[in-house]
Image (cartoon, rainbow, N blue to C red; front, side, top):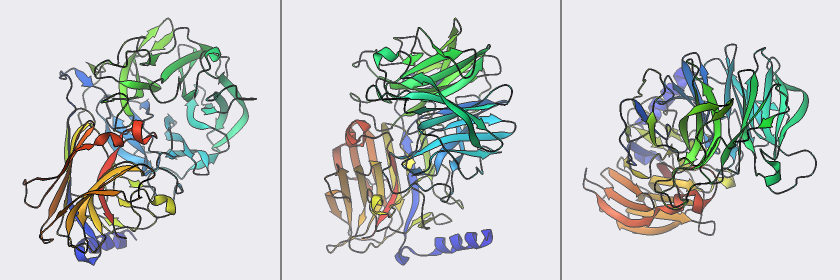
Amino acid sequence: MKRFVLTLLACVAMLPAWAGEVTFTEVRYAGDDGGPAVGPTQYRNPVVAGFYPDPSAIRVGDDFYLVTSTFGYFPGLPIFHSRDLVSWRQIGNAIDRPGQIDYGNDELTRGLFAASISYHNGTFYIANTCFYCGGGNFIVTGKDPAGPWSDPVWLKFEGIDPSLFFDDDGTAWMVNNGIPEGKMRYDGHRAIWLQRFDAATKTMVGPRKVLVDGGADPASKPEHVEGPHLFKHDGYYYLTAAEGGTGEQHAQMVWRSRKVDGPYEPWSGNPSLTQRDLDPARPDPVTSTGHAQFVELKDGSWWAVFLATRPYRGNQYNLGRETFLLPVTWRDGWPVILPRGERVPVVLERPALPRTPQPIPTSGPIEWSERFAAEKLPPQWMTIHPPKQTWFGTGRDGLKLTPSSTPLGGHGSGGQPAYLAHRLQHHRATLTATLAPYQPEPGELAGLAVLQSERYHYVVGVEGGKEGTAIALYRRAGKDEAVSGQRIARIPLPSSQQPVSLRFRLDGPRLDVFYAVEPGQWKPVATGLDASILSNDIAGGFIGATFGPYAFRP
C-alpha cells in the first residue's frame, strides 16, 4: 500500500500544469521584528513566535515537550521538543490523520481548543476539547511524542480545557473549566472542576467536585476562569488557572491545598502574572498574558510557559497569541512568574541548560525557503479542516495543488479550499511564492493568500479571464462582502509561459503587494493597503494569521 501511494505521488508530480493542477516551485519567508540584541547567555520572548497559543509544557528527564492549540486547522496540536526550554523544534502533530476527529464545517475559531500534555510510566497523554465538533473532551496517548498518537477517547464531562495530573502514587486527576453548580451569578461565571481519571480504562471515575467557583476573589465576579493545571511542590498541591478572558484583562491565578481534592486557598498576592494594570500607551507592549503552566527543572528551578500578544497599534496584532517563557520565583511558598506592575521582559537570561539551537529558529529573525521536494509536507503546514480527498502532492517538481471550487471562507458549505497554510510569525515579514508556468481558465485563480479568518484575508494570484491572463489582487474584509472577496487590482500579463513570483510585504498595519516575471524584477500590484484587517481586533476570534499557496476554480 505504501509503495502504491508513493508511486501515485510520483506520478502526480510528473503531470504538467495544464492537467488541472497548479505547481508552486518555492515559498520563501523572511521576518524580523527587531528589538534589543540577544547576548550569548540570553534568550528572546516569545520563544515560539506566531499563532501558537495556550502552551502546555512538561519535562521528561532531560527533554521538554510543548503542545499548543490549533482551532480549525489540520494537522492539529503541534508537538515541540527542546533540551533548553528556549530552542524548540516541531516534531509532529497529535491530530495528524483525517479520520481521528471530524471537525465539522464550523468556523476556524472553533475546533481544537487548549490542550495539555502529561507523562506517566512510559506513556504521553494529551487532553483536549474539540469545541463544536460534537464530541467534547477527549484524550489521546502515545509512546513517542513525535507520534503516532492514538485515536481520541471521548470523555463524558462538560466544559473545556482539560488537564491531566498524575500524583505520586500514580493516581490520575482531571481538572477543567466548566459551568458552575447551581445558577450562574453573572456572565462569564465559570468553575474549575476535579474528577478521577482511570488511566487503565481511559474513563472518568468517581464524583466531580468544584475546586474553584468563579475565581480567586469571587466577590469581584471574575470572568472565565480557565486553563487549569495541577502540580505538586513541597507537600502542597498547586492549582493554577487564568482569569479575565484571553484578552488584555488576562491574569494567572494560583491556589494551594494539602489535599488534591481541596479545599484550595488562593494566594493573597494574586495574580502571579498579568499585564492588565500597565499603561496601555507604553511602548512595545506585551499584553494578554496568561494560560500558564509551570515546569520544574532538574536543578530545582522553576519556569513557566504562557501565552501573550504583541500589538503594533492599540490592541491590534496579526500574529495571534504566542508562546512566552519566564522564570518562576518562589515567595513564601507561592510561585510568582512576574511581580505585579512589571513588564514582560523581551530579552533575559537563559535557563541553566546546555544550548540546543535548531536549524530554523522559532523566535527572533527567521528566514527559510520551502521547495516541497520531500514525500510529505513538513509538520508545520496546515489545511483548513482535515482533507476529505487528496488535492495536493509534493515531490521533485514542487507542490502541486488541484484548484478547489470552494473559495477561502466558503468551507461552511461543506467544501474545502485548496489552501496550504503556514503561521505568520512576524509583524514585519516578506512572504513570497513562485508558480511554474500556468495557463488558467476563465475564473481560475492561483497564487498566495494571507488569511486571518474566513471573512478577512488577501489573495494575490494569476487569474484567467475573457481579457486574458492577469495578476489579480482580492481582499475580503467583513461578513457582508462576497465570499471570494473584492478584486482591488488587475494587471494584464503578456504571457503565461514564464514563472510568476508573488509577494506580500507586511509592516504592522501596512501591506504592500508585488509580482515578478523576471527574477528580482519586482513590480507593485498595490501598496499602502490595510493589514490591520488581519488583526483579531478587527476580525475577531482567537487565531493568528496564516499564509500560503492557494488555488481556486469556479
